[in-house]
Length: 187
Figure 1: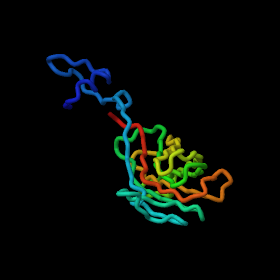
Figure 2: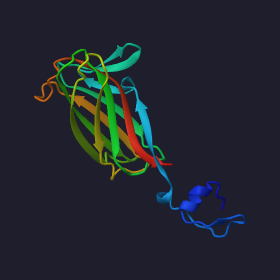
Figure 3: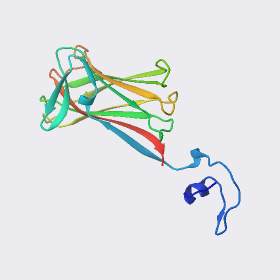
């Protein structure tokens, strides 16, 4: 066995000398350092449904979630090999021409293996107060429990806005300009 990452080997309990490593063993990856990894998505790269419509916001591609009806954005991706089971944080950035009110969102995260039906679903809601200055970025964020997700699962993300919900007081369309999925990965 050849080890080139000596600091990871030391953290895993190997004794390394100038004569090399004396024993052969498997490195326990749970003892290797972790880091926060990000996957960024343009919302226009996904599928849109309901009242959602592709748009531009200056030079940014965006998806408009209209105030007239329920709108959905769908994004699909594969969990990368670095994924370690831990909470997954979904953040999306949006703008509105209005400077008062709240936007209520429902976010759904599903996971499934290549040859399976949807294995796990987690739903979260968040209500975000719009920035007091019109057309400034707003940030909405939810945290998903991914303890039942597995390495190499496919994940599906859905963001939905229902302006008829009593908690959605924005009274205007909004443009989603980006998504970020944050997770813990092997370092």
